[in-house]
Image 1 (cartoon, rainbow, N blue to C red):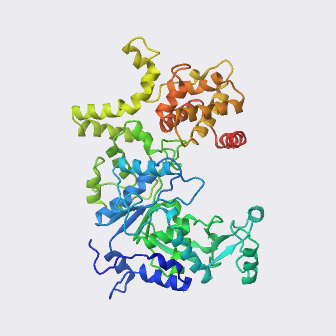
Image 2 (cartoon, rainbow, N blue to C red):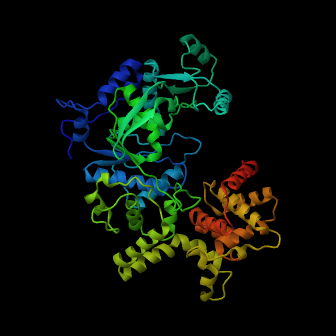
Image 3 (tube, helix red, strand yellow):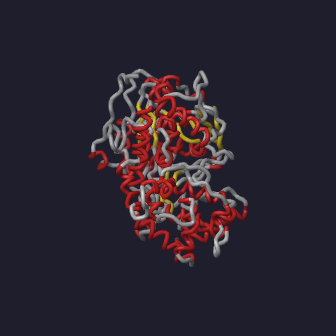
Length: 541
């Protein structure tokens, strides 16, 4: 709906050079709309424009869970004539990277989940990358410190580890013990003069409970004794998720926060910050998490989770979007095949079911088949198939692999068919090897995939270097080490270069094939996987 009587907020650079008291007063004025005679906060929220957001962290593959939450945020906004915002939460300097950000943007766009405001489109409430909003966070954290709602904590990692160990031993609640909460100004000044590192934590009530309304779950009650004195600003000066999330949501005028249920226990921290700043909080809706068929949380160890996997495996983006729409929600007439526009038209967030929706690839295959059969003409089917399988970029990598190995064109499919189709059909006996046991094959596969996941620049040289270094550290000859990978990726103990094949297929498809082989070999228990992870850390850091 149109926004009537509301002024567009803007921050002038000189604001951040004023005193903290003046600065906070100005910020409060800027980001509280002129609501005229309206007095009821609920009236204000729902008479303003609906604004939802998705805020992925660029630290890995674009996850289907991100698309799932993005879909419901966009549907809610579109159904209410609102706006959908994309914000990049990139304050984790060690793990965030530009490639991951670009992958997320491309993957969401491929699925049709475009946005109205974001780092690539701009907007009235930018910047839309947290790494570019440092001055804003500084202004707000200084205000909290002066109000005694936040404090500097000079505790070392060693002391915090000792406190945690003691709490575990005594079976006490785990959390910060308040050591630095009541430091005098003199003690704080002395620590700062000495150059001691510190973080900034929030003050949390010691008694009572936090009650709040969840739009899907009703009233939720969490005791303050369960809430830690959260770090708001890290020792590197960057904000944590919790602090940046609240500041950004408020300054970007987010009206409804629709996110996964894993964030429910963080709501008290967020509401406390809204209270400290004297801001009106948004409405909260916590969606059920996507589940594996065994009802465990959806993870790449049991299911393909990268959007790239489904793109590279030849799924229709409309089918994947449709399938995510069925995760915990249904159309009023119960039909299973529907377009995004139809979902928007019929969308009612109260139709979300809180039971953990199961992400079943077989059901997705069935739905994708319907799209291929019902929505594409013969020519469209052929055009899309050739675009997928014979795109110049992909074929350009495969041709040099084949020319020196074939006598005639009919040799191509038997030799390289594994590069175009589903994972090869293999059994446990395919891993029989003269000098490698099944357990050793399983170990090689898991260690290899962990190493491949670390590669940022996916090039042949990087793939080869990573795997050969791992082979050396394990103490195996390249031919022995590569054997289980040959079987997993190509379906044969020997074929075209497996290094080339891994490079061409990409991480997502290779990970799915290696995971399939791991299951064929009996899988890894939690205990054995933990032990192997420890070994991997010792070998590779």
